[in-house]
Image (cartoon, rainbow, N blue to C red):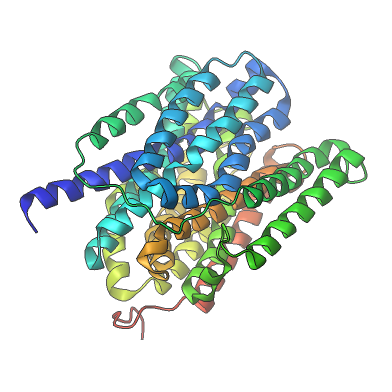
Length: 458
């Protein structure tokens, strides 16, 4: 490998990291701004839920078709499209005069975000191999997952020192840097001649998810018997079932169900659904409660998650290497189990919140578990499929994680009892602990280490 190749590989890695960074950052930076958005634009908990879920609806429903688009038109080209679209929609959100305009702009931003992650991770899987791929995925995971938990820190500072609107403007900086780096890349784009974009499947998936999520969000206000709730919920469920059926019968499915014949891919995605649903619920509830229930400033609420960021930055790359040597099974089991323990520890939060004794211990244990789990999970799922299917495999796993978060946030009203008070916070932590524990069990039962891995346990 020549020095030029080394430099190009590093450039590929940084493009993949920064290309995904804005999508992951935006997914969490918004949480800390929710109280300020609701205070200025109105709408209560419903506005807060839709601000999060509008983005996740289009992101989760289109990320699958984005994987096929990436394969058909080239990963670098699609990544460039996504970056430009994300910058434009971020500016539209920052200028939104009403909650309705903001929600529409968030829907559009999710479309752009869907183009980013599959293309970015597919660049890594097609450029790196062997142990280098595991380490590269670990580095990518450290940076992008760090963005997920660092988002509240940045968002809180902007909310307190300027305005919630600047939370979205900051996306333009990493986008501009990534576009410049792409001009320095010598690598040719990769396109699959047999790739196919199934627009009917994309429409069924979007309508299915949108209808079910709308029902979940509006149910606490209107009740299950209201036609607006049960009609959209049933209609969404029917559309989503039609989407799954279509993937089984069409010649070139958007989501090849044959991918799930790979054991680690199938079980890994079940674990992803449970764990990432719990993660989304945790991010929303902790950040919003610390502000509205405990009286923290936006900056303080954002800083509350800083220990997670520091742990991930320090250990994620190493965990990726350990997982490559010992296999992902033990890490995907211990990680969620520790996150369940951390969630139970957060039940210590009382009316008179003390961050150092009631919040920090649980956050630290949660962060250690997250660090142990994320990189091995990604490696296990992507290593289970052929490299040429990396785009759709990455898209599928990201779709599963985003749909899980979408459903979890939509159901917050039911989980907390309609109001995010202390009792609602405790109920949410209990639900998160159960979901994380279930993710640990699924990982232990379903995941298998690749032949040649050094056993981590006897």
